[in-house]
Image (cartoon, rainbow, N blue to C red; front, side, top):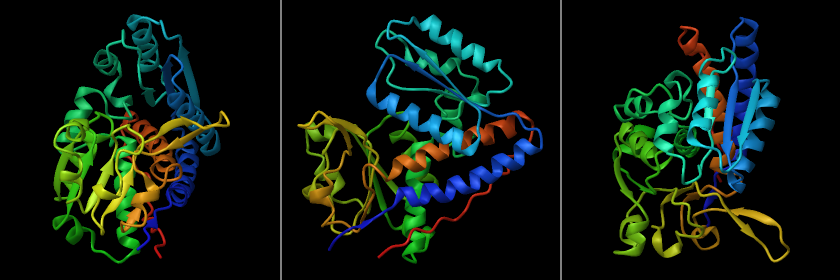
Length: 313
């Protein structure tokens, strides 16, 4: 068996087309919107993500601004930038890129963001609403994982509700921006959900948990963590990992948390890295930014949501 490769780029193109139309419609109605990103330091992955967002924002005509602070910027300096953006009418979404330097309290930074502009749901208020199943915003990466999964199920004729009710979803990684939200979204779909992290790999062995999964979401931040012996033959594997590796030629390439070469021949479906979850995440963040603009204007978000169906062989 060879896994079906779930094409995130195709899904992202469909979402991007609908988002472009929505932005045109809403700005034509006088809605003010815009995304602001903040980066502290020079982390490679964060820089690559920022450049992708900048390019995409230009393409869909969402106003964009970026604030880059030095790695020795104080916590008060970071908070001051956030507070200025909170008060800026033309900014509807604020994203603080991670990781932050060790001397900056991440929780304090997230609390400083206006919850109405917190498009990644990292503020305690938004994280709590998500956990309760009534989200203001769904974090873009976790949302993208399940959008790709739903679209794949549609493409192979699976009834979503039936699939989730009988399936075990195992989420590897417990980050606040991916792992924990993914667990909440699994619960929302009434699946059985299990959460594991790096300690399972160090102690009892991660395969003890992952081999039972019908759906495996891997967001551990460790290149090649999941191998063939860690998955079942009929699993659907969604690889969220983005790990930069320097090749012998000095070029940097991105690899996932899943060893695709060994896992691909064994499982039912797999997202590639790059070209899987990442492209959808970028568009979803901008969707949240536009939805935030409508909420700030006292309107119910009216974004179109195409039922993207990915072709499966």
